[in-house]
Structure formats: C-alpha cells, structure tokens
Length: 262
Ligand code: HPA
View 1 (spheres, rainbow, N blue to C red):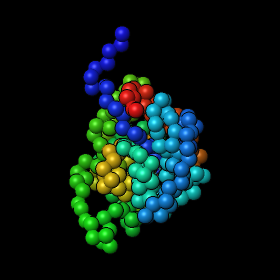
View 2: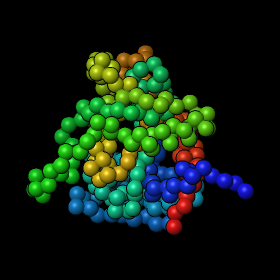
View 3: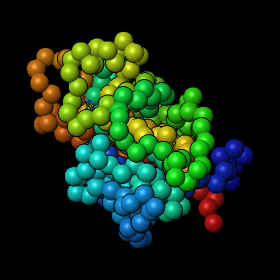
C-alpha cells in the first residue's frame, strides 16, 4: 500500500490562476461554471472560470480580459483580486509575461521571482480607502509567499524544467516598453526582470490574505539587452514556448499536491 508522508496529506488550498499575455484561456480546465462577479470596485477583467484541473478545483481569470484587450495600467486589479476571493480562492498563482534584464533571464525561460520593486504609478493599489476609515499597513517585506514559491520550484525541478528560482521583478507602468537606460537603471537597482502587471496585484493579494506567487515567463530581452528592436513576433514565439512549460508546471503542481478536499 502506498503510504504518504504526513506532510503531503494537507488539504490543498483552492487555487486561482491569473493568466497574463499568452495565457488568456486554459483549455485543459474542465469548466464547471463561468461566473461574472460584480465587486465594490467594479468589474473584473473577465468572468472567473471555475472548474477542475488535474482533479482539483481551480479558478481562472484572464488578467487582460478574454479576448486580450486591457492594457496593464487599465486593469482593475482590485476587482480582479476581490472576484477571485469571492469565488473561493485561497491562494494565487499569477502567470505573467516579462522581459529579461540579466543574463540568466533569457527568453522562453520561466522565473519564480522572490522580490519586487514597484515603478508603476497612478493605479488603484489598496483596499484601505480613506472613505471607509479603515487603514492598515500590511507587512510586505517578502511580497511572494515563500511556501508556495518553494512548492512551485519543486514541481519544476521534478519535471526538469529549467527555471530560474529567484530574481527581483521590477514593475513598470507600460504600455510602452522601457528605454535602454531605464533598464540600465533598473538593473542598478537590483532588478532581474521587468514586467507591467506585478503590482499592485501582489500587494492586493496580501491585503486580502491570499498567498501569492508569480510564474514569470520571459518573452524577450529587455530594452538594450539585445541587438535590434523588440518585436512582437519574437515575444509571441517565446511566450508560446514558455507557456507550454508553464502549463506542464501547473499540472505537476496540482497533481502532486494531494487533494483531501471535501
Ligand atoms: N518590459 C516590460 N514588460 C514586459 C516586457 C518588457 O520588456 N516583456 C514582456 N512584458
């Protein structure tokens, strides 16, 4: 008889996957319900797909809408996270396209960052609004949930997917890409990756007490890090490859986290 070590017999938290550019739908989810939530903060980017993935409950939301049409600075992050919570999410795996700044962050690779620097501005970034009178200052020293990060990293390692387990994600405003010297400055600041959607998403998840991790799929070398212009065909090609690995990684994570769900 198969015996499982006691610590694998934990009930898996209900997981939400937020799909970014390149992951607007997950066809491998067996759909139970598509639910359009309304929130005190307005409408989320898309309906929540509630379904089954590798034998587990999953909730999927397309960050940029389905079809992909909402620019990073126009995403209603507060409504998205609120809707996921309403749908029953207890933890979040956020898939996001990024540019690679440092040499180990090459295109089509996946990174699981451990820190964030936020360069975005003007986004609705908190649930603690003046008008409600409720203000709290969440601890955000370590923006990603370390437990969940390690579980995702282990899943990748067991599949021999060559991920980069770490890195600092710099979140820019977009939708334009950066200048070469903006990237030089970000590298000086300590960033390894650049993306446009990591914030305020991660902080809002923390405010709602949902552990959050990012699977960053490297779509291109960041500005000034390769010869020539950054082209959309190149981005799409790399994202295509990276998303194949990402779906495999998600499958492995869901399959190896034995469900004792009722
Ligand atoms: N910069 C910012 N966001 C991105 C990039 C980039 O180079 N590539 C994919 N998302």
